[in-house]
Image 1: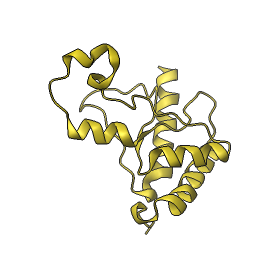
Image 2 (image 1 turned 90 degrees about the vertical axis):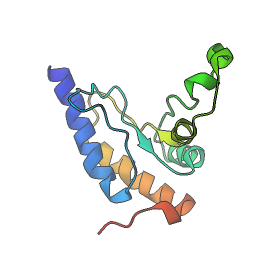
Image 3 (image 1 turned 120 degrees about the horizontal axis):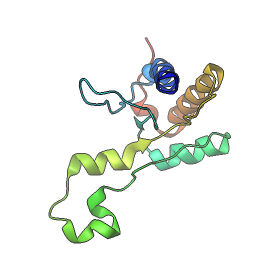
Length: 129
């Protein structure tokens, strides 16, 4: 329970840090409990943003960058393209999420993400009110 509470606190802090950016974050099911193995954001220009963050010393991931039906092992089951899935997979970005991550580190991740978006996708950045 303490481990889940720690992960929930990290996710809550990220939610606060990323709120001014106006980025979507896929939510869990109603009534469910998320273990927050990953924190996910949907960002424009994902690959360029990830490269910029890496240049600034922030490792990110794009977990599940392909729909399941596009992965080689499942290709024979592909019956149709799912546009929402395609868009989500193209935009998903997972910032650092690990035990011991500090609030200061999360603030830096958010600041660097904002700077990358201001440079690479300025039209998609929601201005903080």
